Image (cartoon, rainbow, N blue to C red; front, top):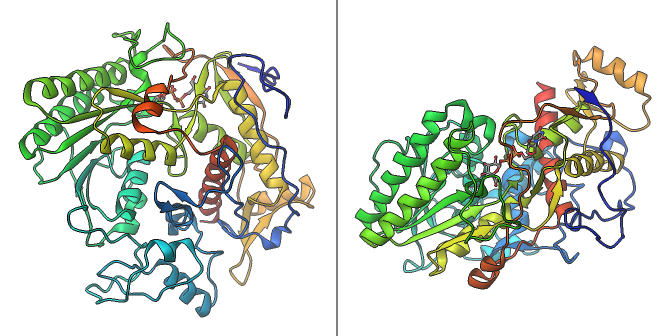
Length: 509
Ligand SMILES: O=C(O)[C@H]1O[C@H](OP(=O)(O)OP(=O)(O)OC[C@H]2O[C@@H](n3ccc(=O)[nH]c3=O)[C@H](O)[C@@H]2O)[C@H](O)[C@@H](O)[C@@H]1O
């Protein structure tokens, strides 16, 4: 294992792109916001949240039809992440009341007063109505006419992508049934919908048959991180074959439209670059990744078998590397591993020489693409991804630098050291010398040197790691009118904020 900094593959800021690989990864120069004193930081405070800018540099107010503030409040306000909308964690009764009002549902079952000045009020503007449940704190959902309201099954709905899809479908006013076995998903990701009249959660495994009357099935169930899907290769294969067959059988029986979440991994180690949907792939069918790659390939084959033979109405999304809040800190993927390591001041480990490329996409863009595909009449496979291709070494540098930049701006806490006598969390931060910080860490019983600069180190390569990956997204643009909207900076910053909140929260226990 060697320890050295990666070659400077990122082009200097503001310089025009020159080569094929690093042409799209540009970070805006650090903003000149005033630094916050450590005492002003709260764990997952949204008060320091910056505007979310799209790829043209314009502030985003909605994702799909849903207010961006509302979506963000579903993960940065989650009790497990310690934050609360609209600003910081409430400490006084008045603040508690404000937070309660923010979350009170506008649905038929949950009355609340209107707040005139937020995007949420426009989204959920209908009169007070009867309260049928003691639960008072649902996020607002749109009221749809019965003819527009769909009954939708989301398999894997408690997973990383699934939970964001469920949020969007719920906010849009649909009836959602989540089926999950919680192998890699988490109840906490969707707990904010528990008890809502439009929402049902079923603990079940797609390898068993399951019956429900629905109009649409989003079939996402399957561990997605290489570490998770290789953990039990046979189960991954069963999930992809038997699970997909069961859900297609259900779609056939209840005449539901069926969407398969497939993957760029079906292209394997691609000989065509970028990858078009017409490319047949180059997969090692006996390697350690085969359980997932071949599993998804057979899932696609099944999907088109049911389509041709039984007229099942199908959609296939080939998803390219997606990241965002609610990724599991320990699931082993590039973005989560690098962010968590940088926040902890640990080394970022690159498997191999760092020249493999990936094109990363923020999860909200993916969800928009999935919903557009489901709503379209297009039945052939569609790549959903960005063309933001960079090497793993470049992503590591970018993520580490971004974590440091956000810390310098006072947007994320350096570390939670201890609770003082009146129960207030104390945050280590700028202005404190390294020694002072180390002392506090020792006092707090935290052995990790969380304030130190992370190194980027190189370790052994993993077997069959695809050397490059970039989607050709012409089809998504043409048939769905879809293109990614999140800038790299906005997506990475939001994900860092999320993991920072998670880390702070776990350090405070
Ligand atoms: O999204 C996709 O298209 C597919 O590919 C990913 O698989 P992979 O690209 O290997 O994802 P990561 O585990 O995030 O790895 C990306 C690259 O970073 C490298 N990496 C990852 C983590 C790390 O700590 N260090 C490191 O160098 C990997 O070796 C690989 O070259 C996902 O895990 C799949 O679920 C998904 O279907």
